[in-house]
Length: 154
Image 1: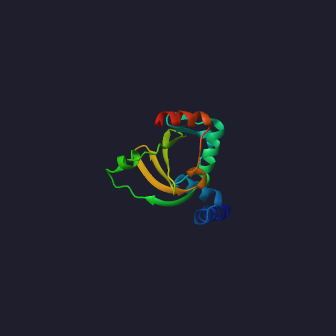
Image 2: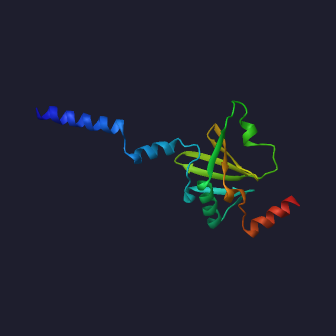
Image 3: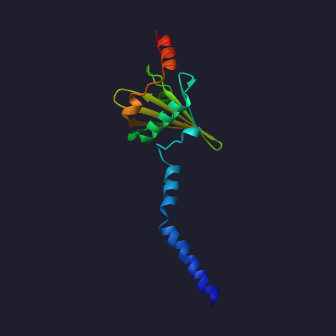
């Protein structure tokens, strides 16, 4: 009799958790499959034109990236991944490298006047989407990197 009641209560608890899980579990599960994830500045490396951003700039860039609003997802047909990874544009991308356990995820951030295009590459999977962020669209680097950038383009 005691085992019957204990098993019934245990099955009831399992069913309750399966039917309406706690919000922390739902948030964790949704963040695992998010197209535009929130990044932590200590887990990322941000480079521009082959130069790593300093700590203050990296933290600021990561915060702007996290605050950006997702506009739309671009659909990539199999075989056309190279068109998104190496687009024909004169915009130099910011490259964000995130290390999640054994997986490396690269984000290529292309700043335009009206939007920010992001190409997310993890293993062989490539996804592309557009963001809206005034801060990212007008993001400037410190004078050291700007001097190098202007020297290379002149």
